[in-house]
Length: 401
Picture (cartoon, rainbow, N blue to C red):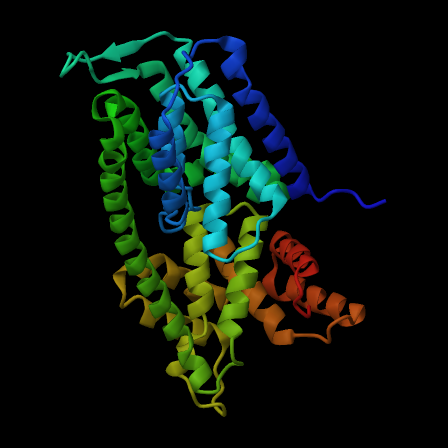
């Protein structure tokens, strides 16, 4: 009998926990139920659809659904988990249909449960019973906000969402979960802060602004999205420049096509397997793309050039870009992995091992050749931990080794 995949089990467990958390809305009874008019509900639903089409993401971080701001505002206004789940689920499904994408039932359950759970988050925060109300502005209306509920929503979006995303994506490496979760929060806290503060703004001003609440919310949210998009464009341009530089040895015919891409893919897998931190993973990827760059200074195939000479030449080119100093150090040391020392030593040995594995390239499915390559790697690299991690990555991949 086939066992369910770990990711499926984690997803099912997270969905059940979300449903249980949302049920606290009724169990605690700390939130006063509120009736939301048809017009306002239609506006919130339309906003949920629109924001589902505009997820927010910091470079290096995972995307966070911008519609969380809409669900959060409804939760702060006292909407029941049933209504939250309906708005979140319908918004997500509609956005998927607009994008002509499929509707996996597992994802639908997760998104609906996530919206449902926001009701429980607000109920827990409201148990503190700390509400702030401003001065009456007109006709007895005043801005107000449950500070306990607002704090709970902020913590859920800024910390809870990245941690759950990390758990879902790190099933095979649970021993590194605390570090990965911390890195995920660090890489997405600006997005989380923008989304949660928008939800709080909606909950604060709805009593006064009514139907004008959504424009008040969405304008700063879209401004934040625009700023992050510009940041992402700059980051992509930087990465594309790195990749373009990695193509130079290929254009000379000194290495096989896509060698740098394959080595980078392997190196990231090995880095994750060994629990390398997120910043080092970025340097590792860049070094993998650029590790053959020294060949543009030694392009004579008849010349007797050692691996260490090529590594030193490549590092000297990379050092001309001040922001890539650590990358240059990794590239310099990968030529002599046995001698690598310091904080970049493991990264250098990872690059050397992945490069050698791609270069040897045994016949797919030939277990004898595969084992021979691993023995060579142990001899050449001198780091059994790195080679063992590479072996596990290769076993899970469709690469020939």
